[in-house]
Image 1 (cartoon, rainbow, N blue to C red):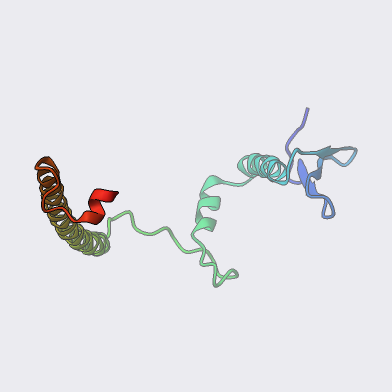
Image 2: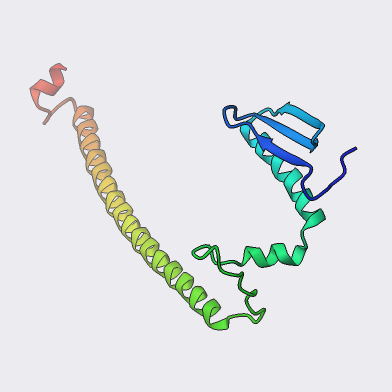
Amino acid sequence: SARYSADYPRVLMTPKDTVRFDLELRPSRVFHLSALSRTSRDLIALAVRAFHARRFVATSFVLQQMHQDPSDPGRAPTRERSSIIDLNGLVQGGSSQLRLALEQSTVSRGLLLKQQNEMASVSAQLEDTISSYSKMIANLQASLGDGGAGVPPELLRQ
């Protein structure tokens, strides 16, 4: 069994090996362990330390520490921000997101219109090419149908 005290259990990381660690339950009871990976080792250490903290440190103190200004670590932690919703901040954030979405929509519509125009132009050119080749083929078939009159001699030899 592992009894929690102010100093134990303790997780000690082995600095030279990224998967080894020591779990110290009391001074006379130390386990030398290895994890599958560095991530697994870190998660095990975090879990043991979190349970230890929950047992001996008040939750309100931990929450207050989370709101401490990182630029001034020696200063006492500040109180939590008010639970009143900052409507001005929400409106400004939503407004900037909406503006960005509208800009992206405008750019997308412009690209779509440009591609549709190019597609129509290519389609018209393709239809023109097909009709002109169809007329040429029809003329060649008609001239071959009347015994080759009007067909150049080079085409008849081929």
